[in-house]
Image 1 (tube, rainbow, N blue to C red):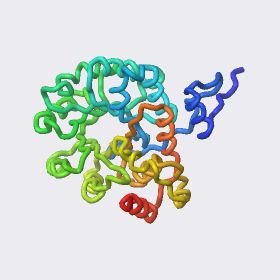
Image 2 (cartoon, rainbow, N blue to C red):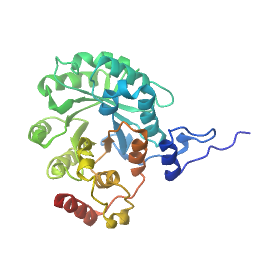
Image 3 (cartoon, rainbow, N blue to C red):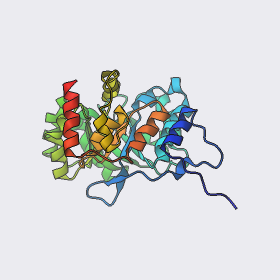
Image 4 (cartoon, rainbow, N blue to C red):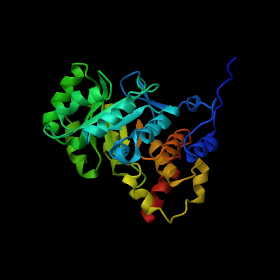
Length: 307
């Protein structure tokens, strides 16, 4: 008779990854508790609340190697994560990442997004068919106009692809406050399924108008730049984590920003970028932690503003 799989707790799992992400026989990474989910508005579908923004690891594939990047995807999936966001860059890298996305057991479970930009560039509409083929899919889960680039040209094409069943959902991304005006204008006339915005404990402008607007319109919210592309950690390199964060079980600066973001019910999923499976594990495990209440979130923002 086969024995039941051994489930690792947080401390044991992180220790295993630190030792090289090699687990002993009979220890199942896939037996971890399932990650909390939030609904995609207007549907009966949900998304786990922490995902992977894949740009950094995909760009670094030649240096990291395929198995290192595959370990990042495996780590996300082993904690119940499903959302993987992609932005095409180079044919060789994208094809290699497609091989990773096509692996069992996550091949049919991941929720994969593609961001396209100007109609004529490498990441333009002309790359869509090849990318879908590279990713081993007949249909992509989410197709975005990245950074609103080429929006007027691309948006009608995205609607056509959704209507034809080539994309299940369509949306746009706006990862800097300078794009919020254009985004508001777009939202005044269109109804995307998803919008991706930058949001962190240090980049909170989106709370003022954009997030309430997205909630009112019933649009799913993806969050990018929770760590400001690494600048967040540089800013906090010599700063001690305040003792009062223990009240919501916060143990690191990564958790500090992620818990702040996830406390906002407008957020459907936050995308974390990393080239390290251990960091992916830490980010994914934050999904299981409590979130700070409103007074604590205000204190977190004030703390960051005072630095």
